[in-house]
Image (cartoon, rainbow, N blue to C red; front, side):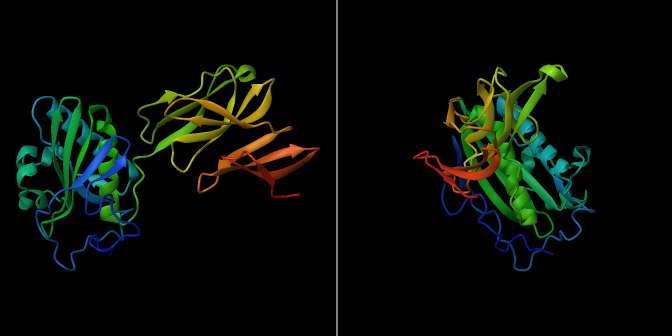
Length: 303
């Protein structure tokens, strides 16, 4: 058994004060509604064969905020169910309403339907912005594990849902969540002898999909920068010669890293994001090079 109240391998989403957790999203801690007693434990040793039952009612709200609260709850529910480590409780079994639970959970109503964890919250729409309050409860000892208020533009409601999912995953399992992540890949279309290969990106659940390149030049082997805001990939832009291209996701701008004669393969960013490692073939020999992104100077590592 792992206590969710013990320190995990990294600090949970936010600390003592408000902080920027993603572009345009501010997280503020909510005051604890109850103190967790010493020794409270959620047993996750059999999580893979016996997923943790968690109740996720709609986040309360009025007008359009109620619809957004429902959509956020649906995304959280899908994230937790699809990872295989949680079992969302059937909504038809809920006894307490979402509005009532957001004010004061009646833990007996959630224990009787088998929930071990409970997610409650409230959404307020403020013009083009949102304030989303979220609380995670341990049903058995009736304690709050996490309380956070997110303030963000209206368009970021789905990302807030992913951030909440990450907090739930980390607080109950002690490991960092992966729901607020994106996938970059090569999308292939057309006949086999004339394939169009475009760079594409999407959220980990397949939403917010878009193409990053138009397919005029083939794109291969994309890799994220550690900041997840840039991509390095191979492209055949110059007379069919392979080139390493740096792509800025925010602006859409592309920049050729350098002119490396011969075949160039597998560009990847260094862990600090300051250089790119790649394989280049010169005179029939393939070797590994490191290119500094600031000076564009290359250094040969192998011979």
